[in-house]
Structure formats: C-alpha cells, structure tokens
Length: 468
Image (cartoon, rainbow, N blue to C red; front, side, top):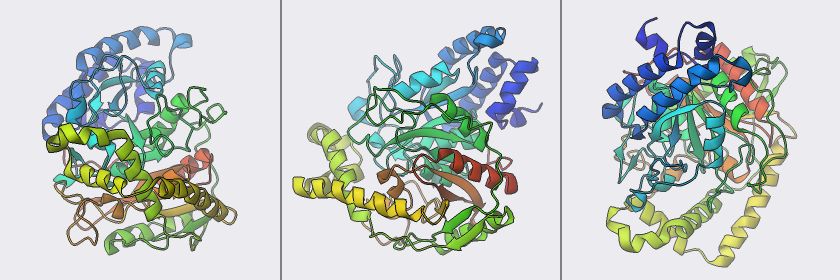
C-alpha cells in the first residue's frame, strides 16, 4: 500500500488491517509520526509532540491484539489531544504564556477514557489562547495553517486537531466546543466535526464555562467519529450535567432509512449575514437530502437574535477565568482576548443573571422547532477561510476582534446543549472547503450521525486531499 493511501485510511479500516495481521500498530505509528514530522514544520498543528511515548504504547497495543477478549475497541489508533485538555505528565499550555510550563498531574476525564479505549496520543494540538477565538493562532504557539492553503485560517479553537485530520496525521482527534470550536475548524479544513449533546461526554475537571462547552471528535469519516464518541460517552457523577445513559451503538446503527425525515433549512437563522458563495454552496447541497427521500423545507426560526446573550455569557466567563492574568501578562496575551475580557467588565451581575434566564427562553424557542421538524440544516459558518492574521474577513461589518460575528451559526447550539455536526458539502471558487451544519433535538445524537452518514454516502468527501 502506498504511504499516502495508508495515511488517509479510516480508523475502522486500520483496525481491520490490525486484526488480519496485514499491518501492526508499531508500523502504523511510525508512519504517522513520520508524516507528522514532515508536515508539522509547515502546518504547525502539534505544539507538544509525544512521539516516543506513542511508540511505547503502540508496542503495548501489539501485545493486546494477541488477546482479542481483552482488547480495547480502538486499540493502537493514533490520536491527538487538544492543548486545552489536561494530560498527566504532558505539558498543557492552553496556547498561552500564562501556562507555558504547566505539566498537569491528572488527565481530564475524557482523556482517560480515550486512553482506556486504546487510542494513543502522538501529541497536543494547537489552540487559540485559552480557546477564546475561532482563528488558528496564539501568542505562544504561533499560527496554524489551513492545509488547503497555507496562510489561511484553519479555524479554532480545535485548530491543530482539524489540521491533523485533514492532512492524514492520524484518523481520530479530540476537540472541544464552547462556541463552535469543533465545527469551525472542521468546516474550514473540510473534515467532519461532531459536538454531542451536553453531558454526553462527561467533563471533569469542568471549567467555569463548562456549561456551554462540549467534548467531541474531529475525523475524516462519520464512522470514525461515531466510534470515538461511543468509546468516551457514558455517565459519570464527577460531572453534574452528565447524561445518565450508557453510550448508544452509534457505529452499528449508522445506516438508516432517512425517507420522509422532516428537514428544515435555515440559510441565516433569521438574522445572520452570510457570504453569498458560501450560501450557494450549502443550498446547492440540499438536493442530497431530497434524493435520500427527506422532506426539505425552508423554515423560520422563532427566536430573538441571541448574539447579545452570547457576548455577555462568553465575555464574562473569559473575565472570570483569565481576567486576573491581564495585569502580569498583557503584553504577551492575544489583544483580541483582552478586548473580550474588557467587554466582560461592562456587564453587571444583574445583566449576567438575566442572560441566564434568557438562555432558558432561547432553549424553549429552539426546542419548539423540533415539534415540527426532525433535523435543522444551516451553513456551519458565514464565511470560508480567510487569512489567519485577521480575526474577521476583509470588509466584514464588525469590530476587528469580533470573530463571533462570522461564527453565529454555531454558538446557539452550545447555549441550548443540542447535538450538532459539520459535514463538508463543497468548496468555493478558490478551492476552500464549506461546511453544512446538521442539528437535532437534545440527546438525538444518533440521528445527527445517521443524517451525516446518509449525506456522506451520497456526497463522499474523505477521498479529497489537501495540498500535501
């Protein structure tokens, strides 16, 4: 098998090769590390490599494969861990000079579950500082490049994870999503990103903004994302929001008859600006659902514009978590992050409490949509990738730091805890990927996977390769 083809196999295909003896975990790990060493100097997706540790774990995986009854479900598959996630004895910088030398003594719960499932991390992936923005750069680790065009935004905050997935540096990667941070880089990099229902993957230790943040997979195929989520989901009392439900058999139930499924399409959620070319690419892909037998209608979203609610909750959370660091680190922090922290200072305690109430009203409005439809389809983002040196595209009508103005399709579904995925649905005239967002009602994660799989089967994307 040619090296390039090996790098773009799915985890499911790799596991079959392992079990047949046609490929060993050590062989594949060495090939994956070689690819990372070749591409990372160009793309800057991995900020803390753990290659030696990964090879040791790959040797252990070979032993486990000899005893199938004791073998974890994703044994020996290379992965990466986002640099916001705590990793025992491995540096966790969060893209910031504040934590440049931090070495945690514990793993985040989802990291521990990934290890128990057999995944082997080759390193920590780049993120915007503290995950604050959707642009792939940080003052500590520098710019992470979109593999479809160097110099362009790869999305964030799970920047390195999406770049690794798109570039064939392992098939499965961990992301987290507090305002779109899985779906944004997935859309910009032309891969699949899944934000599960809140509580599906327990989050511990939970950050201050944990009530809007979700953990999930970034992969090249729907099946691989289902495989990962199935392995890290499930209740745990360490997380007060944990869903008291064992993981569904996502992989086994992926293929489903979607005929007569009621799909509502919203091109703008009723209030968002959108680039015309992005809108055309997404709307041009809707026929796929009709071909699958779905009933597709444009819908009006019965809610008030939630952007002010998002600005309040997001900026105040950043202020609470990182405001104290500004005094000592201001010159080394992202200027846009400082602007967002300053915005947080303008809200009163009463306004923040009111925002919490407005969030409950927003959920009820969104919940009511799914009394009439089964699935909501939107663009993932208002724009395609733009230069990573900017927080907003050229000629975009918003403050220079306001990246959320072009990411408004994502965060309403963090505020309401709904499962949502971004699937690649086409490219712009410049060859940059465009994402389509699939949203379902709370806890209907399986349906998001099934609709994603149906779309993927009708309009495959995993065969497309970026410039490398």
